[in-house]
Amino acid sequence: MKEVSRAAQTAFVARIAILLFAVGATDAGAAGSAGDYDSLVALFDTLLQSRRAPVVDGVPDYSPATIRARRESVDRLRADHDAIDVGAWPLSQRVDHMLVGAQLNAADFELRVVRPWARDPGLAVDLVRRTAYADVSSAAADLARVRDRLATVPRILDAARGWLTAASGELAGMAARQLSMSDGVNQGEPRRAVPPAGVIGWYQDLLGRARVDAPELVPAVEAALAAVRGYHTWLADNQAAMDAPAWVGLDDYDWYLRNVLLMPFTADDLQTIATRELNRTRTFLAIERYRNRDLPEITVSATAEEHAARVEAAEAHIRDFMTRNELVSIPEGLPERFETDAFWIVREGGKRHFWEEITYRDPLNNHIHASIPGHRFDALVQRMNDNPIRSRYRDGVRAEGWAFYIEEMFLQAGMLDERPRAKELFYIAQLKRAARVPAELAMQTGEIDLAQAIDYLVEQVPLMEPDLARYDLEIYLRRPTYGMNYIMGKVQLEELLSARALQLGDEFDLGEFHDAFLAAGPIPISLIRWEMTGLDDNVPEL
Image (cartoon, rainbow, N blue to C red):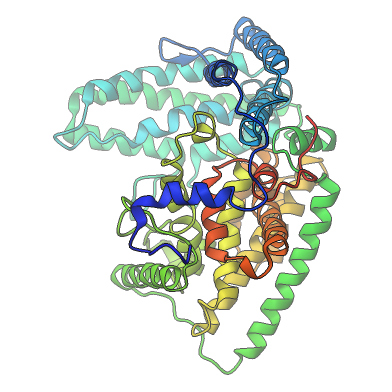
């Protein structure tokens, strides 16, 4: 990286591709035949298509016949995948072959274990939620499309009653709460000074807007609102009989870690590592607080304008520190400014959720993680990847691991040397990510329920409150393993950095390492490690 000017960003992708295989990680052997590799890509195309439920009259088809057909399709694709001889393929293509195998395992896990259409009443809520956010007031509003979407709402919610053959009462309670109450976080919702009360509240909001701006939609909105209310009533009436567990169990959890996420860890390993991270981070927080004991506390932003100014200053600081210290290349074509995840809102009684408590004090931590060079930056860089498999692959451990790793990387690199009180916020955010792991594991083994997990997070993490705790933990109960992505992704990335620094010695360059890591694509870190270092000891046998 140092031999290439930062002004020469147009060569970004080509340069980091060269860096990726520069030392000790060049492919051995000739490239696989174009036909064989093209067959792998075609197989991946078919797999992605097969994982999308067919839609009939606007309603996803989760009938037993369709699920059987999906099962048969996955089995056929697995046989075709396993029949491909990759022995003479270069390493990069063998990695792609493993990626397709992991996605076949993901499809198997969905059909065999998670089965959201049968177990999770929240799936139907997810399918109808965003329709209520429709814009019906602007000149550009497509009212015909909104009407069509509204017409599907009663059909989806009626069909869901038939899908839910093995429903979980705990997941049903979560779905009912989402329908009737604001989650207090409002991520992904249109901005309102007073957020509506759940999905039902948003349909009431749409009805009020339609009466003013699009009266012709009122009957369709009223029908959709009645259907949503009816589904809420149906859940309340039937929840007691929904006796399937919300959790998946340790054996399936471990299987997913190894065969889908391609991680060299078990759930027991996760528990040990997360406990160590909790203790380590709480220790650093205590030391930092003691060090800063005579300094004034950071004041919370008092206005939207002050918050916006702090966000703008945080991004300028990040970009300056990145480029001045050559830590991550910024390719051409990226926006000059990224949005923030924590928009300004004044809630009743001055209430704030966890990330508002953090970002209204100092937006730096959240902006690094969610915007630059975290998720938004990462996603735009990945659009430059033209690999036909990796460009469509999304590994949560890799995504969250990178976004979490760079928080502490910047802290250790000196970004916060002049902001000692902000260091405390970074450690609090780290505590939050570490505490998620034991909470998720205990939920997924049935040791505790959602309410107990919420209490645990509130106890463990300063500034934590029930709304944000619930928002996160509901995701981790519905999507097994996602809560551990942050800690375990960071741990794997640190292990990779350590191995690469040991290989290169004085030639190791942190910025080149970061660029090469991003260039490898959003794939499991065990495979990035194999490509970058030549070490395959963390690559599971599928």
